[in-house]
Image (tube, rainbow, N blue to C red; front, side):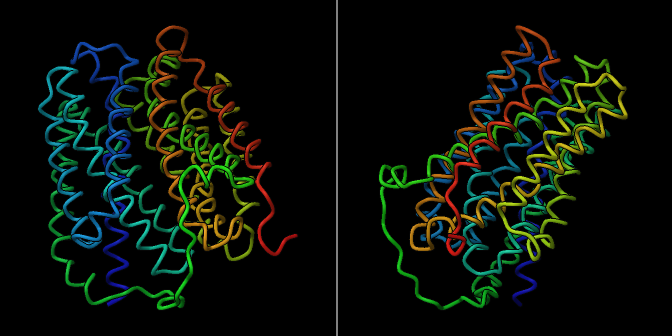
Length: 388
């Protein structure tokens, strides 16, 4: 029963990732139809992120009221409805309006499942859980690319919306599993004393600002790389829109493969080593995108950036109790998630303005700058417990 529930949980993260990369893949075709500037994709991304923050901050109340299974199923259904709404949009203001329920639904799934897995399952499943998100994020642009070849971008949103409806039905059918299974963690049933801390108290802890900046820069890197990949290829490298939409998925393919492998690497290497290795690989990928070597090398660069991004988020979450103590980790992780969503909300629109006012050629050096800042902040973290 436990393994069946875990499969459902993985499926829910596929559904979370499936629509996440659609906007970036479809945007080169969308913005002329909507009469919007190319930079406005960042505004839509910000609206989605704000909705995600709101639902995440209230997820504990909803989970307490309905349980994680119902919250996940209802949130997935809300994203499905929003995707069908995207396909009906014929103006930019309407797109912004529909982005609100999409963000609310995505945040509900993310917060509920991450918390459930952290409590009930061994830590390696965190990397594999986010690998499943990458599967969805990589498949989404491929579906959009195929839709652009034969139809138009609204068809791509309708196809993914239909898949989300199927996933919603599967999640509702799985609700009895959540009641029967408590997970497989050997720590299940242990009582842990947790220190209740305000956000202000958390930020005053030594090393917390460093980890907050690391999360902010990482999520800014991931979201900027994914959202603007297709636009960079179209506007900066002259790649056609259909090919660019497909190539945008390579970033997520690299991240998905990396997180699958990272689940095994965590058995051999420390979280801190894997975060820094990932940053170095992401930087190498950004450097390769600076070279005008054609579309094949551009695709390889996107894969490399994705591989580098792969271990950072799950390893940073897993490293938090070792850095600050299990009694404080719940409060600290909440602040980390807020910093992550803030990076996702603020930085992609900023790059959109730079792209519009200057040049899309800034895409590789911008990614390189974010990677360097992330690694610099990570070097300021305290040593893990037991390393002193």
